[in-house]
Image (tube, rainbow, N blue to C red):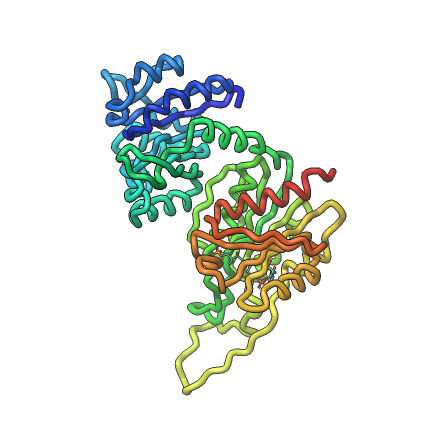
Length: 400
Ligand code: PMT
């Protein structure tokens, strides 16, 4: 953590007293710490204490004593933004983009990874509104430190305690350690659905949102890789500077973009839900309603994964996906072998919260030697991290 620039944003909870210890631990690790506080946090611990420990003035307002504390500059300066403690109120504001304090202004401006350590009473933590806010913030790619279990300030016992400062520092340490492990690697990710035109107004598509593939692209990019994202029709905006997005619509276009970029890719992750069939003829004009029935003749689309599997040269690594509804393991292992993947990520529509469009997914990773890893239901950002960790374990020890 030596030389890392950390913003510690403290919001108004009794756990704010732990911020003093947290600042000390960050400073001891060699980090530069800038503390921000909401006005209510200053009721629990004084800015003087935190500025003495961080050796920097503490900011509590965007405008203070006729001076402008630029939230944009702070947001760009930081390597990490840690919001600890994060109250139920601040989670609600951040989840909804409400910008009424220096903490929320810096949060909205920050381009660095954001870590939140919630602290609140157990019923507040369990409330569906808080849980929905947590899910939304996780969906934006923020990292959550798990809340602790124990006695709370109210005297109640349960979940809601802020993670201990030592745990927060250890989490960030681990994050920074493998932060740039894919630096110098070229990655190609396919993501999203494909649309196969029937006529100028209609198409055959599927329910993929692109969330899973985009999360994977972002995870590689955050870890220093140069990523080419071949993205089917998706509403997602991808902004990471290390990601070059090529937007496509049909399976044919995705195939062409993938083949063109495969040569330079050290690692390819094929998470797109590609149509297997498309209309054999695309009508030039809108098809008019005529008889009771209508028959559409379909033809096979190119199998992108199988084609890349054939082109794969030594040193290249391909991760495939399998979306199944039945006989999951058998179907996935057949695809793993047939398409020449190095490992395959299986997700099943039988699992609640897994597959299309959810912010969560539940996966199993299958290797060619039958080694298998089952994962819990997690946010797609966390699933992406697990997949990229698995790639790191297999690939980074090899020389390209
Ligand atoms: O986008 P989200 O809403 O987040 O949803 C994520 C997801 C469910 C789409 C994703 O997790 C997923 O499972 N993607 C693969 C979907 C799929 O089409 O699986 P499949 O079992 O039909 O295909 C097997 C593999 O071959 C996949 O790697 C697929 O990308 C690839 N394929 C399939 C057909 C084809 N013509 N070309 C291909 O490259």
